[in-house]
Image (tube, rainbow, N blue to C red):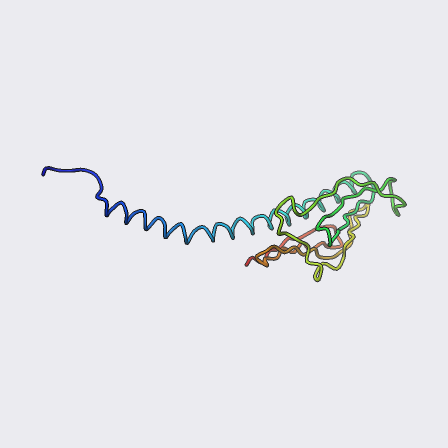
Length: 157
């Protein structure tokens, strides 16, 4: 027989077996990455909503607030109906639900003590921490400082 080019059946089966082993190892890691990525997206979006409310409060000379509904895993962004402070009546801007990111993301009600964050016209805010968890028990913590700044930290499982 001359020079034959190609793969033998044994070589092909061994290659497929190696690929199958690699896939079995990689798929759970990829799923973990995707689940934790959803938690990061939710945490960063909440932090950006707080930053947006602070910018609006400074620009409009109005109070803004974020109300957390821990049982429903949602939060409401609201604007004061009149400039200055204090506020007598609030207008709802938007209601957001954590299920937009993934169905397993929820507020950790044991660690999220403050549920109403008010941003004053001068940019100061109610201090506190918003803690999120997912099905892997990974945690995202959005810390809100009295200066209106926020910090997001994640502890991934």
